[in-house]
Length: 426
Ligand code: PA5
Image (tube, rainbow, N blue to C red):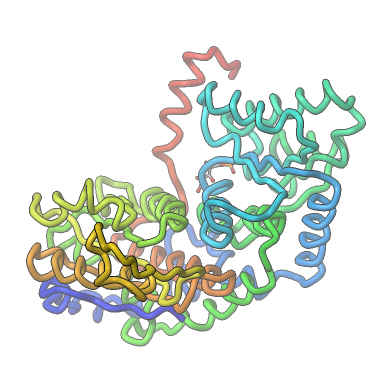
């Protein structure tokens, strides 16, 4: 279970009266599935209901891909992409030892990125996991067509059947039709789980397993999350407490929440959080603007603004108490760099002092309120638990805002304009 800490007089002084009054109403909306968008609450108990045979099929598919190919192209965008990438980078790091390579495509229309990624894959024997709930999203559809074309040209059409795995709707969409017609292995994105809540389904599980990560542990973290964050009383439920705190900070005049970590390999968790909260809550002219930064890196860019700029934001810091790796600073006879005062100290100790010093500077001197969300260490179990914590918090704070957390009507407008400009037949 995560530990939630609140720092700053603004958090200590928040008036929780409204939450006290609405706690039962909001938690019932989640628990009894009676709130806005209630047909998209399948993620609440998805992990504990997922048959072990399906988990085994995901693991077997991942093993087959790892055994028969040198790389996997994961094709998807938004909720069909961010969770898997966040998990793989957070757990395997930015310089993974694994010889098996994972490449993400279909999350951009950049010709430069796409050509570079295709070139990287060109001389490798690679498989494709194409992920799209609707099965019709332009970005992944275009990338998928380009990838297929490349494989087909080199190995012939028959090669595609084993090399492609489709994760999509059980019945609808162009991808489903194609997967059935071509005989690709298929995994289902359930009707009642929306994209940004789908990292705990095959959308996330298959790429994560292909990266060599233990999905049993990941799912155990999610399943424990179902118990850890289900108490209807927000005083006893850190997910609801955090959801309530961010809602009240928004109402108290802080329109921006900045997600912070001190680990570069957690940066994609920040991207996942931006989507989770931004797409779930940003409706009806309301909601916090979610931003993200990595410290201490961004202390040398955004640090100045946070410390002394306009007082528009609060921080939510994700801390893992124990780093995955560590190294000591050695003593140096000459001490020309003057760093001998750090000799014998671990880099994680120095990073932790940076965290403590920054927290004090921002909260006490800069008057920037901060939440700290602590986990013991970043492993598959704790990451599954952390994802679930944030999903549950998001449902709670969105319902406090009287917003449907599970739709994204605004996203359609850019698509409509783009299709008109591209001359897409209606
Ligand atoms: O969270 C969401 O619902 C969206 O971000 C979708 O995941 C994204 O638009 C991709 O959609 P699809 O999986 O249908 O290709």
